[in-house]
Image (cartoon, rainbow, N blue to C red; front, side):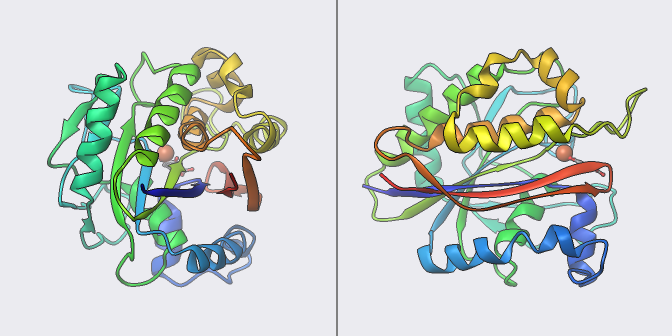
Length: 282
Ligand code: DHB
Ligand code: FE
């Protein structure tokens, strides 16, 4: 059976893509953010995962407001990036993992998650920026399965439902008849609000409690409704649901998870940034 080695989470701000393209990692503004990544890259170099299952939210590149699936799973041989208007370089296509995609889709439908299946899917900054942060090499060494969760157009799925989706994805990965090593990613957050009266809103206290909960009490955030999460984290901060899906995929039995490394830094652009790697230990 496939081995689920652990989970990764990071913020996914477009300007990070520009900073990478311009080589600004040591610049005083960027350094406290980029310094969160080398210990995690060392762990990945040791673990050598083959496939990354990526929970993220599309921002209007592949799905627009006219058609907005709650949950959508990629099932393509490759995923193209395209210009979103942020001025970041368009990256070459990412390799898919269609066999794992269809295994996940079959398992999820069987578990009554009626997902949309996408045999063509453009991937935006929420997919490309995190993959570049964790694997900066020219060609991304892992194959990928994108899973989109709607955090753009209301109604959004509840934190409880997103955690349950993550659990179902984790069980499906562990039941995949393959010798591959799999890592799950969640991208987005942490607290931020890009528009309206509270534009610029950040909630460090909540972000740090949330990051801590993923280690010791992963269901903590499921006590909150979507509206409570928006109130506590901002309209776009609700993207932290992706971190919850990632954590749901990891097993809670045995000794659970070990935090390999985490970092929190305010702000990059308008956003509180976090990064975290959790190793599955049982
Ligand atoms: C920013 C943050 C995001 O999550 C995003 O998708 C776009 C922009 C920002 O802070 O600039
Ligand atoms: Fe975003």
